Image (cartoon, rainbow, N blue to C red; front, side, top):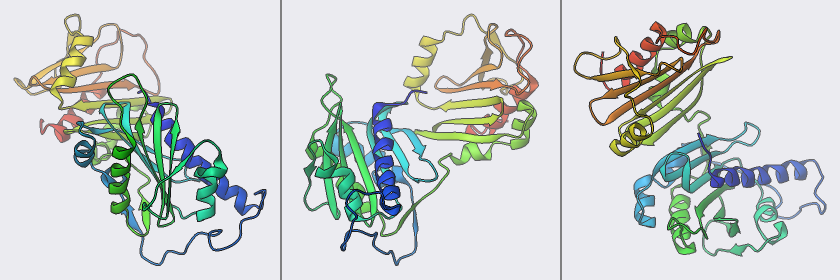
Length: 331
């Protein structure tokens, strides 16, 4: 699954703030900070869990940017520097907008050192947005960083590319203002971003298929009821994708014609669709429900496969049926 440059930049800039906090706390800053902006402000209200993808919903972002957007990526940062990043775009892995929240309180001086003039480059201060805000342009990204309620909120949009997918500073400011207005006084983030459907799939079935206890590594809702789930049972893994997007289904079938695959029985009720598997690759399963719903499954048991041409296993069928039961209501 590809990552966009925007996602990498967002996490790198959040890491910059964390690094400055560590250096300042250890006395390593070249000019020790002092004064009212040198320490984080105390928070007195109860913490409120924030859905970062809800700070600017895909619907609102689509209106503000005049471009249809859905959630195409979501990432949790390292535990020592907690942050959540939400990506919006038209296709999975191709972010046009990235919203990153690092909720732990930092000092205003630390924020200014990370994103203001002291950080180099050519930042532009934005007035009347949070307690401080700077726009920075990096490669093909324009990023607006805001210090608000002691947290750091960063919103980036693609900029300066040859494609038509580019947005101006006015659009970025409106988008960031909407996210800032939605941020509670004492924000906190959920460490797991996996959709409920991923967490609800029977762990016993997964364990029997993997030969190990499963760990949910990643889960992502892509909009329109589509999602991706990934489990590990080292050294095995299960990756499941479910799509209700008819255009996405058509693209998949165009790139992966099924005329040379083998029909797989025992996955779907009669008349509900078709299941296929490649005779050249073990552990793969493609399920079409009707004409515009698609499920793909890739299973690698911890013990591996004896041969690439092995038939679809009962474990693969069981995982597929468990997913279809939750996602499509099929038994």
